[in-house]
Each structure stands twice: as C-alpha cells, then as structure tokens.
Length: 65
Image 1 (spheres, rainbow, N blue to C red):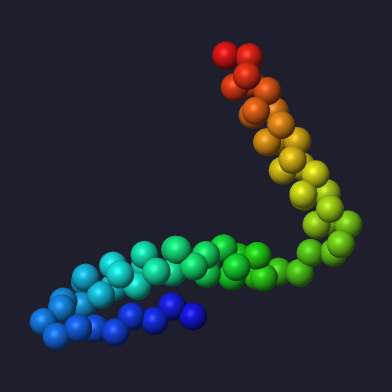
Image 2: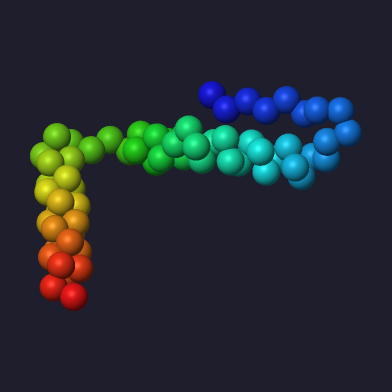
C-alpha cells in the first residue's frame, strides 16, 4: 500500500505528486484493473494468446524495417 507522509513546509501538490509516483512504481493501478472483473480460464488463455500474437507481429514488423 502506497503511503506518503507530508513533511513540514511541503505543499499538498508536491505530496500528491510523490503519492502518484509511488502508486505508479508499485503497479497498484495495474493490479486493480487486473482484478476489476473475473475472467474465465478460457477467456484468460485467449487473451494471453492474442497479446502474444500482437507482440510477435510488432516484433516482426520492427525486424523487417
């Protein structure tokens, strides 16, 4: 869990900026999105394969250039 303690003389904006950076470093948003809805095992497998195909296509197109 991301936690930021506001220091003496620190503005709320800078503390919020530090908090956002910390949340992004810990991949909290990514985890929340991942657990937002349930995927059946078959759907998860299809999604994983589709992402792999997309990565491979992208890699092949870079290699050709």
